[in-house]
Length: 125
Image 1 (cartoon, one colour):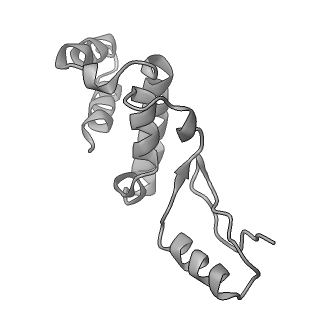
Image 2 (cartoon, rainbow, N blue to C red; image 1 turned 45 degrees about the vertical axis):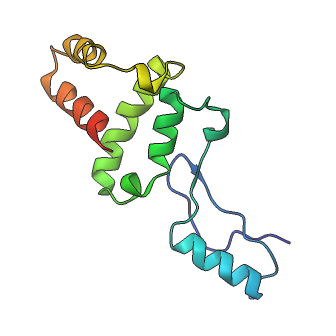
């Protein structure tokens, strides 16, 4: 029987299912791996077509680069990238050119702070 133990999932991610009986070797190994942060599965990641903006954003949310950001930075970037994914998710990430980003930034010219936050979120590896 699987148990979730006391592991909580990050917003937008699913908590790992732990195999085996509590206190079994299999359970404890999976528990330790979950506490170490591996693997994190982004909800909906399997529905994203590889090579798209949606897949890139989902991959970033499940990455160590995102997980190691300060919580406040995560809270700032997540809605920005979710909006970006909702608007451009089916587009190929490889086709995203500087001119596209400039056009998106120009659309946010009335709110320079939002434009800078958007640019910072896109630049993060």
